[in-house]
Length: 176
Image 1: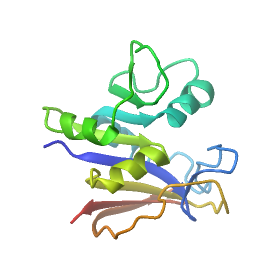
Image 2: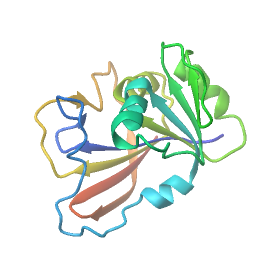
Image 3: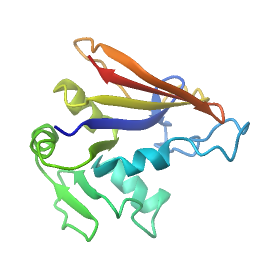
Image 4: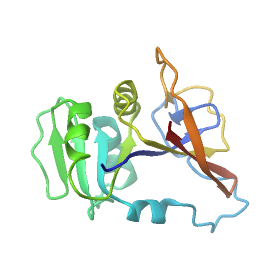
C-alpha cells in the first residue's frame, strides 16, 4: 500500500502558522541561505497532494496566486464549500479518512498530506499517517495554529532520519 506522509514545517513551539494565519516566518536562520533542503527529493516521491480549504486558500491567494505549485501532482482539497474542480485541483466534500484509505490501495507513489491542522487532526485520529516528515524552523511564535491538537492517546514513532540546513532541523519518523 502507498504511504501517507505528513511533510510540513512548524515553529520550535509547534505552530504551522502565526496568530494571523501567516507563514512568512518559514525560513531558516540565514546561516546557509542556499542550502537546498529536502523538498525537491520529497516532491519527486509523491504523486498525490491532500489539502484542507485553509491551506488551499492561502496558496492561491498569498503564496502562489498566479500558478498552482503542484500541477504535476493530483491535488485534492477537502472542503464543505461547493467548488468546481479545476484543471489541477479536485474538491471533495467527503470524509478525508475514507478517501485516504481508498486511494492508498491504488498504484502510485506516496501521498502527501500538505495541511492544514484540521486535516492532520482527522488523519491522526484514524491512524492514517504513516510517516511524519517535520521541519522545525528556528522560530518561537508563542501562538497561532498548532500542528498537533490534543489526542486522547499516544502515537509511538521510530526516528528514521535527521538532517539540518540553514538552522532548520528536519526529522522523519515512521509509525511503529
